[in-house]
Length: 162
Ligand code: SF4
Ligand code: SF4
Image 1 (tube, protein in one colour):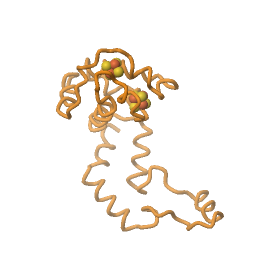
Image 2: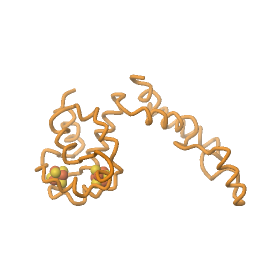
Image 3: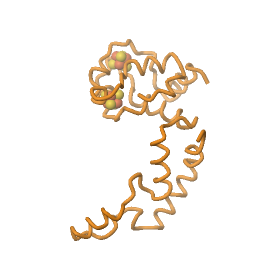
Image 4: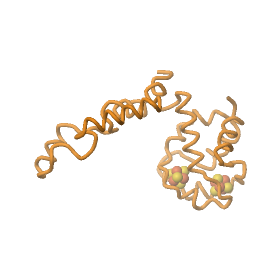
């Protein structure tokens, strides 16, 4: 795959980043960019130019707040583009170690942050049920979730390139 393929996959999804005029409105509106190295204008530029964008750590720094997308004068679906590029990257097994860890927990427990003894104790102190109304409490729902995740081949994607 080359950069044009990333761009053409975006185009197929109805997202035209070629309309970008590099005005920087997105970067100026970016809440994450104030605290991280994310520069969304440059990210869009890299997505137009090269498949290297798939390896870009900044790809994962967006919080999907949608500020940039709401303000883009060219009405580019910037966040949708970021999510799509993330998806392409993940399907190629390109993700951060932290993602793999979170996905493993999700596959096993149905939660990215499963409940632990400390939180069970806190719940009991507050007079709450030991387990929340989630897959933690309903094992049959966890089985259903696992079936869905199997269909999505999430485990296979996660195990790529490890
Ligand atoms: S606001 Fe829109 S047109 Fe301007 S740089 Fe960002 S993506 Fe490009
Ligand atoms: S959606 Fe992402 S890139 Fe856009 S402003 Fe929010 S954090 Fe920044």
